[in-house]
Length: 207
Ligand SMILES: *[C@@H]1O[C@H](CO)[C@@H](O)[C@H](O)[C@H]1NC(C)=O
Ligand SMILES: *[C@@H]1O[C@H](CO)[C@@H](O)[C@H](O)[C@H]1NC(C)=O
Image (cartoon, rainbow, N blue to C red):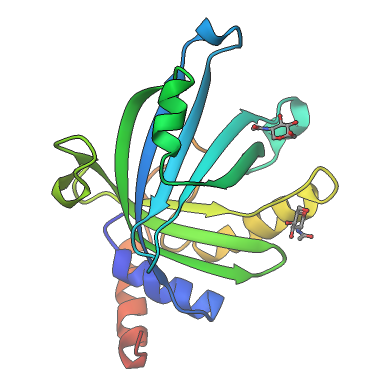
């Protein structure tokens, strides 16, 4: 994503809220099938930008399947999250989990209500040169930012949430096309012009 600043101006205008900085340390842990259970993967996350950073454990389930799921433009999957104490890593090691990889996501996020509780994050993915050395992180793909749009849904309201998320994404269309994870999209031909016009319009707005 070359036009990060333009995207930020567009998001600021659409959401009407200020961005929040992100600096998320993410540890991906995997357990083999040796615990008598199926292999599993959990993520430990900590936003270092918070005044008092706390850890969260996240388990992401499989995507919704079936003909209906193929047709909808967003990915629907189960996700469980809970707060954990600082020694969670040691706890998971003792359960037989092993560190698969760790990352540092650096960027910003917008949280707002627009038919659903939408979160947009724009971040670069960095890797650590030494174990847990978040101060010495280097970009995995320099110059490329990951844009994610997510919203919580339940089995009762997901069609409504899918509609809200997809209609929000259409507002971003002059600048970028978003796709489901794993599906690639092409470059948006209007992006350079849209970015230039946003940058000149946004000149008077203090962010
Ligand atoms: C989340 O928790 C519920 C209730 O315990 C469980 O049924 C579901 O499988 C869990 N999903 C994930 C992705 O961990
Ligand atoms: C849908 O349900 C989830 C889970 O209960 C809730 O967090 C979310 O706010 C609901 N969204 C809408 C648009 O009703």
